[in-house]
Length: 193
Image: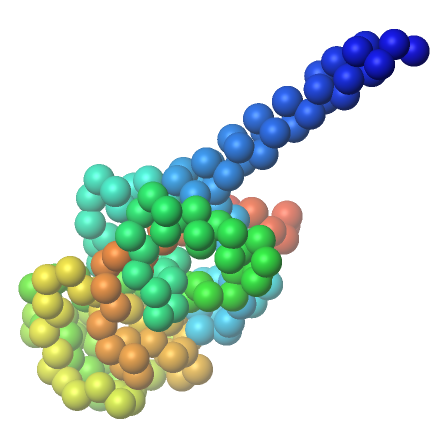
């Protein structure tokens, strides 16, 4: 076989593969990603080992709102562009173990208080049919005012969750995306509310 023809045949395979890898990288860093739940803090809403599809675009256009289930980067801020690509590379080599999945309870301007095992937002008891267990105070003092650019987050499984009661408010720029769809296991596939 002619060397030029072999080279052309090889390149006919290499270019589409490179193109597909670039497309997957762009989609994963900018549009959506798959994340595995790696803690029990969101039970019974989400269970350890379930795979989620997260939407990375929504919060580029609007702020997270109370009740949203978010995925955020533990101890890291997300500054877009190069930072997104670096996080993608970290994911390839370290698995996605730097993420936490929690529910937004307080947004900027809210006052959060915990009394008698319940959550109060701006003086009103929050109706939380998704919460499991009592919501007890931990290391943070309450009432707590949520400042601009910050969020107060809790796990739905309140008695085991390490959340804003322990580590305080998170920066909005730590938020990687909104959980949209549970995709694994197959018998649990559903939208996330």
